[in-house]
Amino acid sequence: MGKNLDFTEKLRDVGLRPTRQRVKICEVLFNQEKTFHFTISDLVKKISEEKKEKISLATVYNTVHAFKKRGYLQEISINSDKSYFDTNTSAHHHFYDEDTHKLIDCNNEEIDPINIKKNITGKKINSIEVLIRVASDNQYQK
Amino acid sequence: MGKNLDFTEKLRDVGLRPTRQRVKICEVLFNQEKTFHFTISDLVKKISEEKKEKISLATVYNTVHAFKKRGYLQEISINSDKSYFDTNTSAHHHFYDEDTHKLIDCNNEEIDPINIKKNITGKKINSIEVLIRVASDNQYQK
DNA sequence: TCAATAGTTTAGAATAATTATAATGTAAGG
DNA sequence: CCTTACATTATAATTATTCTAAACTATTGA
Ligand SMILES: [Mn+2]
Ligand SMILES: [Mn+2]
Ligand SMILES: [Zn+2]
Ligand SMILES: [Zn+2]
Image (tube, rainbow over all chains, first blue to last red; front, side, top):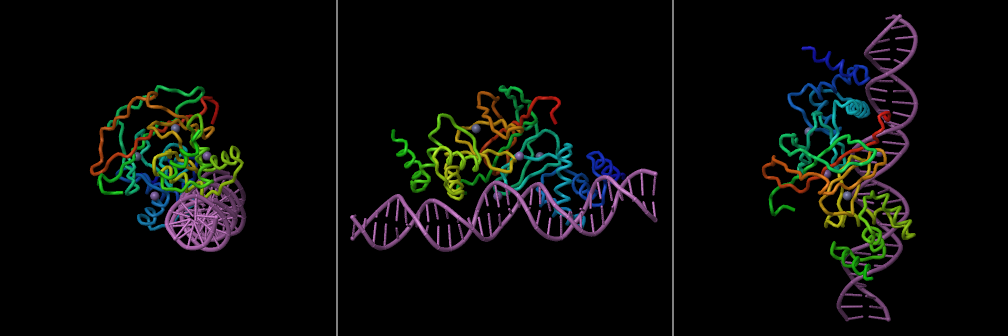
Protein backbone atom coordinates (compact mmCIF):
# COMPACT_ATOMS: atom_id res chain seq x y z
CA MET A 1 0.00 0.00 0.00
CA GLY A 2 1.49 3.24 -1.22
CA LYS A 3 -0.98 5.36 0.71
CA ASN A 4 1.64 7.63 2.21
CA LEU A 5 3.15 8.12 -1.21
CA ASP A 6 -0.29 9.20 -2.41
CA PHE A 7 -0.48 11.70 0.41
CA THR A 8 2.98 12.98 -0.40
CA GLU A 9 1.82 13.61 -3.95
CA LYS A 10 -1.42 15.14 -2.81
CA LEU A 11 0.41 17.52 -0.54
CA ARG A 12 2.88 18.50 -3.22
CA ASP A 13 -0.07 19.03 -5.52
CA VAL A 14 -1.52 21.67 -3.25
CA GLY A 15 1.90 23.24 -2.92
CA LEU A 16 2.78 21.93 0.51
CA ARG A 17 5.79 19.97 1.64
CA PRO A 18 4.93 16.51 2.98
CA THR A 19 5.86 16.99 6.57
CA ARG A 20 5.09 14.47 9.31
CA GLN A 21 2.19 16.54 10.64
CA ARG A 22 0.61 17.08 7.26
CA VAL A 23 0.82 13.39 6.35
CA LYS A 24 -0.98 12.55 9.61
CA ILE A 25 -3.70 15.04 8.72
CA CYS A 26 -4.03 13.39 5.31
CA GLU A 27 -4.29 9.96 6.85
CA VAL A 28 -7.17 11.05 9.02
CA LEU A 29 -8.88 12.95 6.21
CA PHE A 30 -8.40 10.68 3.22
CA ASN A 31 -7.62 7.20 4.55
CA GLN A 32 -11.20 6.53 5.62
CA GLU A 33 -13.81 4.09 4.33
CA LYS A 34 -16.40 6.81 3.96
CA THR A 35 -16.37 10.53 3.44
CA PHE A 36 -17.34 12.57 6.46
CA HIS A 37 -18.14 16.04 7.73
CA PHE A 38 -16.09 17.79 10.37
CA THR A 39 -15.28 20.99 12.15
CA ILE A 40 -11.69 21.95 12.90
CA SER A 41 -12.10 20.91 16.51
CA ASP A 42 -13.60 17.56 15.44
CA LEU A 43 -10.56 17.01 13.27
CA VAL A 44 -8.06 17.87 15.97
CA LYS A 45 -9.82 15.41 18.28
CA LYS A 46 -9.87 12.70 15.58
CA ILE A 47 -6.14 13.14 14.94
CA SER A 48 -5.43 12.94 18.63
CA GLU A 49 -7.53 9.76 19.01
CA GLU A 50 -6.52 7.93 15.87
CA LYS A 51 -2.90 9.00 15.66
CA LYS A 52 -2.09 9.76 19.27
CA GLU A 53 -0.61 13.01 18.09
CA LYS A 54 -1.30 16.60 18.96
CA ILE A 55 -0.92 18.87 15.99
CA SER A 56 -1.17 22.58 16.58
CA LEU A 57 -4.38 24.35 15.67
CA ALA A 58 -2.56 26.69 13.28
CA THR A 59 -1.21 23.78 11.24
CA VAL A 60 -4.61 22.13 11.06
CA TYR A 61 -6.29 25.36 9.96
CA ASN A 62 -3.61 26.06 7.37
CA THR A 63 -3.62 22.57 5.91
CA VAL A 64 -7.41 22.31 5.76
CA HIS A 65 -7.61 25.65 4.00
CA ALA A 66 -4.94 24.63 1.50
CA PHE A 67 -6.92 21.49 0.65
CA LYS A 68 -10.11 23.48 0.40
CA LYS A 69 -8.55 25.96 -1.99
CA ARG A 70 -7.57 23.15 -4.34
CA GLY A 71 -10.89 21.38 -4.04
CA TYR A 72 -9.75 18.38 -2.00
CA LEU A 73 -12.16 19.51 0.71
CA GLN A 74 -15.40 21.41 0.57
CA GLU A 75 -16.71 23.91 3.07
CA ILE A 76 -20.43 23.71 3.84
CA SER A 77 -22.48 26.86 4.39
CA ILE A 78 -24.41 26.72 7.62
CA ASN A 79 -24.91 29.44 10.13
CA SER A 80 -23.01 27.87 12.91
CA ASP A 81 -20.47 29.21 15.30
CA LYS A 82 -17.99 26.83 13.65
CA SER A 83 -17.09 26.07 10.03
CA TYR A 84 -18.04 22.66 8.65
CA PHE A 85 -15.94 20.84 6.06
CA ASP A 86 -16.64 17.79 3.92
CA THR A 87 -14.25 15.19 2.51
CA ASN A 88 -16.89 14.45 -0.12
CA THR A 89 -16.03 16.92 -2.84
CA SER A 90 -18.65 15.88 -5.36
CA ALA A 91 -21.54 18.29 -5.93
CA HIS A 92 -24.16 17.31 -3.37
CA HIS A 93 -26.40 18.85 -0.76
CA HIS A 94 -27.01 18.58 2.97
CA PHE A 95 -29.46 18.04 5.73
CA TYR A 96 -28.46 19.83 8.90
CA ASP A 97 -29.83 18.27 12.05
CA GLU A 98 -30.50 21.17 14.38
CA ASP A 99 -30.75 18.85 17.38
CA THR A 100 -27.40 17.08 16.98
CA HIS A 101 -25.62 19.74 14.88
CA LYS A 102 -24.59 17.04 12.40
CA LEU A 103 -24.66 17.11 8.60
CA ILE A 104 -26.15 14.35 6.46
CA ASP A 105 -25.53 14.06 2.73
CA CYS A 106 -28.31 14.55 0.24
CA ASN A 107 -26.95 13.18 -3.00
CA ASN A 108 -28.03 14.38 -6.39
CA GLU A 109 -30.28 11.39 -6.97
CA GLU A 110 -32.14 12.24 -3.77
CA ILE A 111 -33.18 15.68 -4.95
CA ASP A 112 -34.64 16.96 -8.20
CA PRO A 113 -32.19 18.94 -10.32
CA ILE A 114 -31.81 22.58 -9.35
CA ASN A 115 -32.57 24.84 -12.27
CA ILE A 116 -32.07 28.57 -11.83
CA LYS A 117 -33.81 30.78 -14.35
CA LYS A 118 -32.41 34.08 -13.15
CA ASN A 119 -28.87 35.10 -13.93
CA ILE A 120 -26.79 37.96 -12.62
CA THR A 121 -25.17 40.04 -15.33
CA GLY A 122 -21.41 39.81 -15.38
CA LYS A 123 -21.36 37.07 -12.77
CA LYS A 124 -20.82 33.36 -13.13
CA ILE A 125 -22.15 30.69 -10.78
CA ASN A 126 -19.46 29.14 -8.62
CA SER A 127 -21.65 26.72 -6.69
CA ILE A 128 -25.20 25.88 -5.79
CA GLU A 129 -25.77 24.60 -2.29
CA VAL A 130 -29.03 23.36 -0.83
CA LEU A 131 -29.31 23.19 2.94
CA ILE A 132 -32.28 21.40 4.45
CA ARG A 133 -32.65 22.13 8.15
CA VAL A 134 -34.31 19.32 10.04
CA ALA A 135 -35.24 18.78 13.67
CA SER A 136 -37.04 16.25 15.81
CA ASP A 137 -40.55 15.46 14.63
CA ASN A 138 -41.83 15.29 18.21
CA GLN A 139 -44.77 17.65 18.29
CA TYR A 140 -44.25 18.43 21.96
CA GLN A 141 -40.65 19.42 21.43
CA LYS A 142 -39.74 23.10 21.55
CA MET B 1 -49.81 57.34 9.57
CA GLY B 2 -49.95 55.01 12.50
CA LYS B 3 -46.60 53.43 11.71
CA ASN B 4 -45.26 53.80 15.21
CA LEU B 5 -48.42 52.25 16.58
CA ASP B 6 -47.81 49.30 14.27
CA PHE B 7 -44.30 48.99 15.62
CA THR B 8 -45.58 49.14 19.18
CA GLU B 9 -47.88 46.25 18.40
CA LYS B 10 -45.17 44.35 16.59
CA LEU B 11 -42.84 44.74 19.54
CA ARG B 12 -45.48 43.65 22.01
CA ASP B 13 -46.20 40.71 19.75
CA VAL B 14 -42.65 39.45 20.11
CA GLY B 15 -42.85 40.00 23.85
CA LEU B 16 -40.85 43.21 24.01
CA ARG B 17 -41.78 46.55 25.48
CA PRO B 18 -41.89 49.36 22.92
CA THR B 19 -39.00 51.42 24.11
CA ARG B 20 -37.57 54.36 22.19
CA GLN B 21 -34.56 52.37 21.01
CA ARG B 22 -36.61 49.42 19.82
CA VAL B 23 -39.05 51.63 17.91
CA LYS B 24 -36.10 53.20 16.09
CA ILE B 25 -34.83 49.76 15.18
CA CYS B 26 -38.30 48.91 13.83
CA GLU B 27 -38.41 52.07 11.78
CA VAL B 28 -35.16 51.22 10.09
CA LEU B 29 -36.09 47.56 9.59
CA PHE B 30 -39.74 47.75 8.59
CA ASN B 31 -40.40 51.28 7.35
CA GLN B 32 -38.60 50.77 4.06
CA GLU B 33 -39.87 50.64 0.51
CA LYS B 34 -38.11 47.37 -0.17
CA THR B 35 -36.93 44.46 1.89
CA PHE B 36 -33.19 44.24 2.37
CA HIS B 37 -30.35 42.12 3.68
CA PHE B 38 -28.07 43.23 6.48
CA THR B 39 -25.46 42.29 9.01
CA ILE B 40 -25.65 43.61 12.56
CA SER B 41 -22.94 46.14 11.83
CA ASP B 42 -24.78 47.27 8.67
CA LEU B 43 -27.87 47.82 10.78
CA VAL B 44 -26.09 49.80 13.46
CA LYS B 45 -24.63 52.03 10.75
CA LYS B 46 -28.04 52.46 9.07
CA ILE B 47 -29.64 53.45 12.38
CA SER B 48 -26.90 55.91 13.04
CA GLU B 49 -27.24 57.45 9.55
CA GLU B 50 -31.02 57.49 9.22
CA LYS B 51 -31.97 58.21 12.80
CA LYS B 52 -28.89 60.02 14.07
CA GLU B 53 -28.94 57.73 17.07
CA LYS B 54 -26.42 55.34 18.49
CA ILE B 55 -28.03 52.25 19.95
CA SER B 56 -25.82 49.84 21.82
CA LEU B 57 -24.76 46.66 20.08
CA ALA B 58 -26.32 44.49 22.78
CA THR B 59 -29.74 46.04 22.20
CA VAL B 60 -29.49 45.61 18.45
CA TYR B 61 -28.43 41.98 18.78
CA ASN B 62 -31.19 41.24 21.29
CA THR B 63 -33.93 42.91 19.27
CA VAL B 64 -32.89 41.34 15.97
CA HIS B 65 -32.86 37.91 17.57
CA ALA B 66 -36.29 38.44 19.11
CA PHE B 67 -37.69 39.32 15.68
CA LYS B 68 -35.94 36.37 14.12
CA LYS B 69 -37.39 33.99 16.69
CA ARG B 70 -40.92 35.12 15.82
CA GLY B 71 -40.31 35.06 12.10
CA TYR B 72 -40.29 38.82 11.47
CA LEU B 73 -36.74 38.45 10.24
CA GLN B 74 -34.92 35.58 8.59
CA GLU B 75 -31.30 34.61 9.00
CA ILE B 76 -29.48 33.52 5.83
CA SER B 77 -26.95 30.69 5.91
CA ILE B 78 -23.66 31.73 4.37
CA ASN B 79 -20.23 30.96 5.58
CA SER B 80 -19.23 34.44 6.40
CA ASP B 81 -17.51 35.91 9.38
CA LYS B 82 -20.77 37.76 10.07
CA SER B 83 -24.44 36.71 10.22
CA TYR B 84 -26.75 37.97 7.48
CA PHE B 85 -30.41 38.77 8.09
CA ASP B 86 -33.27 39.45 5.71
CA THR B 87 -36.39 41.57 6.20
CA ASN B 88 -38.01 39.49 3.45
CA THR B 89 -39.50 36.61 5.40
CA SER B 90 -41.15 34.80 2.53
CA ALA B 91 -39.59 31.52 1.42
CA HIS B 92 -37.02 32.46 -1.17
CA HIS B 93 -33.40 31.82 -2.06
CA HIS B 94 -30.21 33.79 -2.53
CA PHE B 95 -27.32 34.62 -4.72
CA TYR B 96 -24.24 35.56 -2.76
CA ASP B 97 -21.81 37.79 -4.59
CA GLU B 98 -18.38 36.71 -3.42
CA ASP B 99 -16.81 39.90 -4.76
CA THR B 100 -19.05 42.40 -2.98
CA HIS B 101 -20.26 40.17 -0.12
CA LYS B 102 -23.86 41.15 -0.89
CA LEU B 103 -26.96 38.97 -1.11
CA ILE B 104 -29.44 39.11 -3.99
CA ASP B 105 -32.88 37.52 -3.80
CA CYS B 106 -33.79 34.59 -5.98
CA ASN B 107 -37.54 34.36 -5.76
CA ASN B 108 -39.48 31.15 -6.18
CA GLU B 109 -40.50 31.96 -9.72
CA GLU B 110 -36.83 32.32 -10.64
CA ILE B 111 -35.95 28.77 -9.65
CA ASP B 112 -37.60 25.42 -10.33
CA PRO B 113 -39.34 23.92 -7.29
CA ILE B 114 -37.06 22.06 -4.91
CA ASN B 115 -38.22 18.50 -4.46
CA ILE B 116 -36.39 16.33 -1.94
CA LYS B 117 -36.94 12.60 -2.30
CA LYS B 118 -34.96 11.54 0.76
CA ASN B 119 -36.36 11.94 4.21
CA ILE B 120 -34.72 11.55 7.61
CA THR B 121 -36.60 9.26 9.97
CA GLY B 122 -38.05 11.04 12.97
CA LYS B 123 -37.09 14.45 11.62
CA LYS B 124 -39.20 17.11 10.01
CA ILE B 125 -37.97 19.72 7.55
CA ASN B 126 -37.79 23.20 9.03
CA SER B 127 -36.50 25.02 5.97
CA ILE B 128 -34.89 24.58 2.59
CA GLU B 129 -32.36 27.18 1.58
CA VAL B 130 -30.59 27.42 -1.75
CA LEU B 131 -27.45 29.50 -1.89
CA ILE B 132 -25.95 30.31 -5.28
CA ARG B 133 -22.44 31.66 -5.00
CA VAL B 134 -21.51 33.96 -7.85
CA ALA B 135 -18.41 35.94 -8.72
CA SER B 136 -17.10 38.11 -11.50
CA ASP B 137 -17.23 36.45 -14.91
CA ASN B 138 -13.87 37.94 -15.88
CA GLN B 139 -11.82 34.95 -17.01
CA TYR B 140 -8.58 36.61 -15.99
CA GLN B 141 -9.77 37.25 -12.46
CA LYS B 142 -8.30 35.05 -9.75
C1' DT C 1 -49.97 62.03 39.53
C1' DC C 2 -46.51 59.15 41.18
C1' DA C 3 -44.08 55.55 43.42
C1' DA C 4 -43.01 50.68 43.00
C1' DT C 5 -41.61 47.23 40.08
C1' DA C 6 -40.40 44.66 36.34
C1' DG C 7 -38.14 44.94 32.47
C1' DT C 8 -34.45 47.59 29.48
C1' DT C 9 -30.26 49.82 28.00
C1' DT C 10 -25.68 50.23 28.11
C1' DA C 11 -20.57 50.10 28.47
C1' DG C 12 -17.55 47.16 29.04
C1' DA C 13 -15.97 42.45 30.11
C1' DA C 14 -16.06 37.64 28.72
C1' DT C 15 -16.04 34.07 25.30
C1' DA C 16 -14.80 31.57 21.36
C1' DA C 17 -13.51 30.92 16.53
C1' DT C 18 -10.14 32.22 13.62
C1' DT C 19 -5.89 34.41 12.03
C1' DA C 20 -1.30 36.49 12.70
C1' DT C 21 3.38 36.46 14.68
C1' DA C 22 7.86 35.18 15.27
C1' DA C 23 11.00 32.00 17.25
C1' DT C 24 12.38 27.27 16.57
C1' DG C 25 12.49 23.11 13.78
C1' DT C 26 12.87 20.35 9.47
C1' DA C 27 12.52 18.63 4.38
C1' DA C 28 14.92 18.83 0.11
C1' DG C 29 18.65 19.35 -2.87
C1' DG C 30 23.34 19.83 -3.74
C1' DC D 1 26.22 16.76 5.75
C1' DC D 2 24.94 21.82 4.95
C1' DT D 3 22.15 25.27 3.58
C1' DT D 4 18.07 27.33 3.19
C1' DA D 5 13.49 27.91 2.24
C1' DC D 6 9.61 26.52 4.20
C1' DA D 7 6.85 24.59 8.26
C1' DT D 8 5.37 24.09 13.08
C1' DT D 9 4.17 25.78 17.18
C1' DA D 10 2.90 28.38 21.28
C1' DT D 11 1.09 32.32 22.02
C1' DA D 12 -0.88 36.77 21.02
C1' DA D 13 -4.17 39.37 18.31
C1' DT D 14 -8.51 39.93 16.22
C1' DT D 15 -13.30 39.89 15.80
C1' DA D 16 -18.16 38.50 16.15
C1' DT D 17 -21.11 37.49 19.58
C1' DT D 18 -22.86 36.98 24.28
C1' DC D 19 -22.80 38.11 29.15
C1' DT D 20 -22.96 41.17 33.26
C1' DA D 21 -24.39 44.29 36.36
C1' DA D 22 -25.35 48.98 37.27
C1' DA D 23 -28.12 52.85 35.75
C1' DC D 24 -32.47 53.83 33.51
C1' DT D 25 -37.49 53.69 32.05
C1' DA D 26 -42.17 51.96 30.76
C1' DT D 27 -46.05 50.31 33.05
C1' DT D 28 -49.43 49.96 36.34
C1' DG D 29 -52.23 50.59 40.07
C1' DA D 30 -52.96 53.37 44.11
MN1 LIG E 1 -25.20 25.62 18.36
MN1 LIG F 1 -15.02 37.92 3.69
ZN1 LIG G 1 -21.50 16.06 2.46
ZN1 LIG H 1 -33.62 37.74 0.65
